[in-house]
Amino acid sequence: MARRAPLAEDPASPDRPARRSPAAARPRRSVLRRLLTPLLRGALVVIASALLAIGLLAAVDPPTTPYMWSESRRLGHVEQHWVRLSDVAPAVPRAVVAAEDADFCLHWGLDLRAIRAALAEGGTRGASTISQQVVKNVFLWQGRSWMRKALEAGLTPVMEALWPKRRILEVYLNVAEFGEGIFGIEAAARHHFGVAARDLTEVQAARLAAILPSPKTRDPAHPTEALRARARAILDGAATIAADGRARCFEGD
Image 1: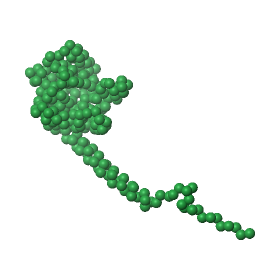
Image 2 (image 1 turned 45 degrees about the vertical axis):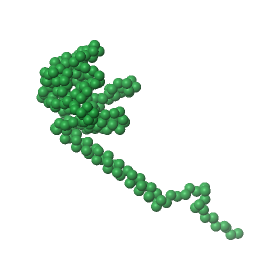
Image 3 (image 1 turned 180 degrees about the vertical axis):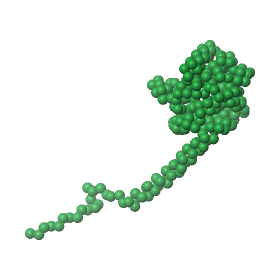
Image 4 (image 1 turned 45 degrees about the horizontal axis):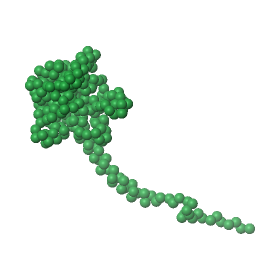
């Protein structure tokens, strides 16, 4: 008895998954490539521009910042006078570091211990280092978006690698806000106390450092009792970092 030849499988059978034609998949990949290529190019341009700006501003003083520019537009004018760190009273950088970032000399831009503490407290306390604030103020924009925070976290170690600690602190002291329309330690010293930054006393330096978290609502020349208490704590902190070596990276010429 003759055997029957096996039936050929039906390629259109519902029990057999249809094979995707390579020609059909190619247009989809082509569309995806056309969408991603401009994004990748844009990202590379942004990264290259940021690296160039960070390298340039290691030696060149920034003429303004995005926030200073926006405040100048809003107010019509802002006060800022650039000053070298060597022309600032030594009490000032110690007070500011004690108030804002006591481990400034120990970290590489991101203070992981402070970040963990902030997360443990549910994000109710700040964890930005002085280096992060310089990146935000000079290269980025104000706000709390995740995109800005991601860029800040990526650019900060790069700046730390290219800039000495003294340069980071010098730029910070010259672009930080010390009152409405008052930017930088020289303008702050003149506006609030009628002296140059090199002539600030330890108490005046501590009071200026004490207003940094909220410079528009605090007056160092007419401090409340709470501000006086904060300034006293900053004075103690400044003495501590001077004694234990945490001020060594920015002191001296």
